[in-house]
Image (cartoon, rainbow, N blue to C red; front, side, top):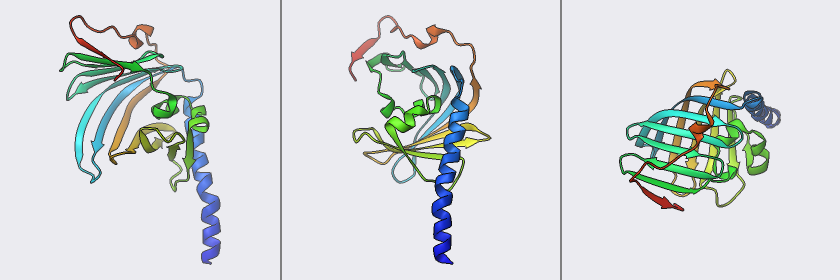
Length: 200
């Protein structure tokens, strides 16, 4: 009986993973733009909250995105397809560097599921609404990621830091598929007088 149960679980688990992948593919099919809100919580390796923030997010195919942090400290994170800009309003400081590759940006999997096959390995999970994947690149900044779905819509992304074990949990809220978004939303010009740091 125990052997039969083990066989059933071995067969069933990949099917559950495949179901989560299909949900991702259906959500991303025909996706050109995306907007929504987010609530982000960072936990230390003992499970205590070390940081909490919220704001709005935007995406435009194939690789432009923007995160506007409203609480607790206003910040902007803008990827224009070539460079990644981070503006910290409280510090009056902008940092800019080359846009990270998809292997370092698991959120890109949400909008481009073909990246799963190229940059990640999907692991089995016992919940058909959870997609768990690991980066293939050893230098990736995270150890593993989870994406959770509800009624075919992604509602949460969770990342585990590969160095210090921090967990970043991002709740995705009020997602709107293919809204009209101006291309200017994904361009960033440093405000006059702020410090601009290159390559950080």
